Length: 346
Image 1 (cartoon, rainbow, N blue to C red):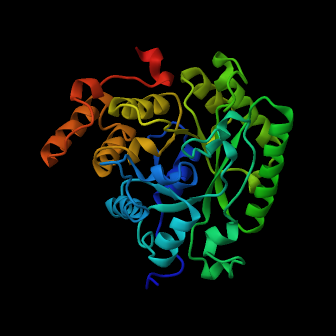
Image 2: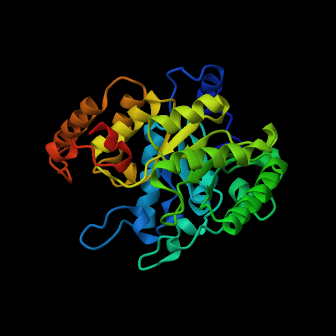
């Protein structure tokens, strides 16, 4: 057991940035999260690309989290409850750092991505493996708040599919979660995916469909039960600007999606911020990079406005060369925008 204090009283950048963003949504602050919770979605391949037919081990995956925390650039690291127990509770790696530990609080069926599976062909069904008590303390019944040692921030996800029965079930589960979270003083951010069923909504309506469902779902939720920010797909300038104009207190953040090119990752942050996004929560874009720390370093440069996407891509490749790391793509290929949500730039 770590000799770190059971309660981490260090000021966290997440809290200070949220305070500034809520006071002035046009400020320069931008939140970056490393989403290392993929073991609750992909299973074994979640740890990173296979080398010589073998994916990194779970121990290697955890080591990458330790390195990210030691680097101290991201604002949040999202983990599974089991990894949070080891790293946050037992090892205390977040104590005395400005990084906030978070855990995935639910694992709906649309993120069940086991090799050979077809779960995602069916409209998302609500499910929770982790309990809030276990995320907070590693125990079935959490001890008093003064002995809290785990994560008090969670990622809760929902997917609307324009399917009455499926969407009602998702909302009912969300209500149950909110009530428990409020009772246990557990904070959460809300992830809303695009429909996982083909043809559920016309392609050109997906961004507005997500926005409307977020606004509608939270209209009946008072401050005590609302998310601290959002995690949504970037559906282009119009959808992002619409959501920000509707309610600046929602603090929209974008999810990363597939790995894509390095240029995709940097451009996605730049574009989201340009149109009002104030957070990026990247999983595969960081985890599948040739050098995760170098990727995070340049993501921060773009997020803070110190580099544009082109400059950051060049800096990333220069860093790989300096370290003697072979890139997955040559610089020219890696400088192309390939993400579907960014095609309006091509």
